[in-house]
Length: 465
Image 1 (cartoon, rainbow, N blue to C red):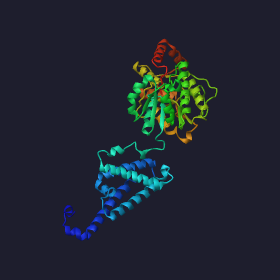
Image 2 (cartoon, rainbow, N blue to C red):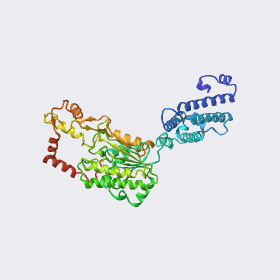
Image 3 (cartoon, rainbow, N blue to C red):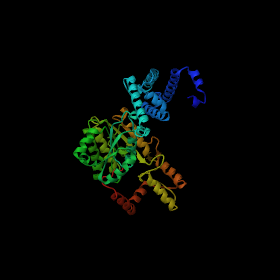
Image 4 (cartoon, helix red, strand yellow):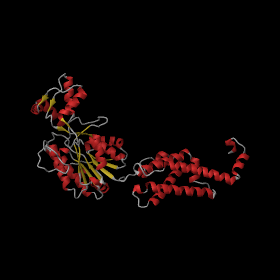
C-alpha cells in the first residue's frame, strides 16, 4: 500500500496504528463503496412498473460487479477466516438493502409479504453476481438479459393463440405479444405454412407455428394438438377472415362465420381461457346512418356486401356465447398502413383513390372528386389497431365490452380526395364524377375483367387480417 501510494511504510503505520486498524479501514471503505453502488441502482418505487425497475436494478448490480470485482468478491465471498468485523459490515448492509427493496417495490408487485419478497430477491441477486464472478465465461451478463423472471409482467407465462398470421395485422400483433413476453402459438393454413415458419423467428422467440384451418371443425388439428392447445391456451386473438368486398357468399360464410364458430369451440374447450379478443369490423353497422354505438349490433340493418353481412353474423355468434366465453370485441374501421412508415401490403380501400390520382397525373388529366363527397371515410393505421388490441383486450374493464377502433374525427370523402391530391399531385381536384357514373364505369368490361382476375388469384380461405 505504501509503495502504491508513493509513501513510506511508517507513515501508513502511524496513520492506522496497527494491522487490525488498517484492515478495519479497508473493510469500511469497500463496504461503503458497495453500498453506494447499490444505493444508486435500487428501485425507487415510483415512475413506472416496479417489475421493470427491479430488472433494471438487477442489470445495474451485474454491471457494478463486472466493473469492480475485487469489492464484490470481498462482500459476497469473504475469505475463510475473515474477521467478524467484515461479516458484521456485510450483514448490516444486506439488512439495509432488504429494507429498501421492501419499501420501494414490495407492494407494487402484489406480494402480501414485501419483507419476505425482498429477502428472496436479494438472495437471488447475490447468487447471480456470485456466478458472474466465479465463472464469467459461462455466466456472463448477457445470459441474465431478458426474458428474465424479474421482468415478468402480470400476464407472463400465458399462451396466446392467434389466427390470421402471417396476415397484415396478424404479423404485427404476434410481434407485439412476443415482445411483451407472451408465448405465442399461430394457426396457419397449409398453403402459408412454409412462409410462416420461415418468417416467424423474425417476429419473436419461440413462436410456435401450427398447421390448421379455421374453416374446419376443431380447426383442422389432430387430436393430440387440439388437446394440448385447449389445455395451454389462456388468450385467443381471432383475426383471420376473408377481407374481400367481392367475396362470394358461400366462401364468406364458410370462413367468416364457420371459422369464428370453430374458434369459439376451442375457447369453450379451454379450461384456462382468460380472454377471447375477437376482431370484428366497424362495418357490421351495414347501411345504418347516424350515430352507431358500441353496444349496438342487431338493428335490422341491411349490408352492402357479403363481407359485412358475414362479419355481422359472426359477431352475433360471439355475443351469444359471451356468458360462457370471457370476450372483448374490437371493431376497427378501414385499416391502412403504418402511421410512421406508411408500410402496407393491402393496396385496396383508400389506395384506389391514390391509384386514380396517379393515373390522372400520368395521363395529364385533372384529378376529380368522385362518389358521395359528403360520406365519411373512416380509416385507421395498422399500428394503432395492433397497439389497441394488445393493450386493452385483456383488461378487466374491457371484459364483455365492444370497442370501436375508429377515427373519432374522420374526414369526408371530399376532404380525403382533396388532401391526397394536394399531397401526391400537388394540385386541387377539379370537377366531380357522380356515384352513378362511377358504378357504371366499374361494371364496364375492362374493370369487370380486372376484378374477376383479382378474385381468382385469391384462395377461398385467404385470411388477409
